[in-house]
Length: 221
Image (tube, rainbow, N blue to C red; front, side, top):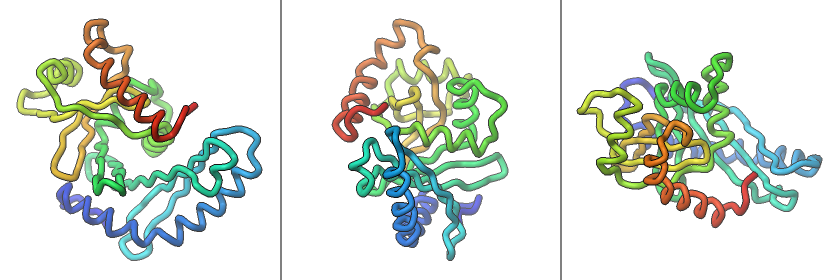
């Protein structure tokens, strides 16, 4: 089980070891999802399934997505873990083919609520679920002085609070820190929050993200 005393690298190891035991659950959820897709008249179809692993007691949510009926047997799969620390709930998203995990602290979801959803009525658990229901990964770039200046202007953080990358996503722009095989997503901003001259420096990143999504998944509605 992920516990508060774990380092981010220990969390990486825990997640990758534990998801090996999800095979039977993944297969069962996939069969259920196939039936949902066959019955659906509207696409894309997305369904989430919550589970807790038997041995380590970690909590995961499995997301299956089919953009059309023919993808019912080969849906897009995302797996998200959720764990708690005294300061709140964290999410961890493994990228299986790259041996990476991305960790989203409570502050990230606080900013997501304030800046993207703008809704105080939703529970913290649903905030996390909504983020990943609409998430298609990200394209990142190494931080430079312009990006870092924008980060500090929105976060009012201390000078020693460092970020090492900026990323374009389907829901906004994220800033984070890379620690080996772990990405820590610290905050998110919307495009509407940027001045016109700031938008220009993000445009290349946004175009790269859109091209990546098109290459990997086609046109996502």
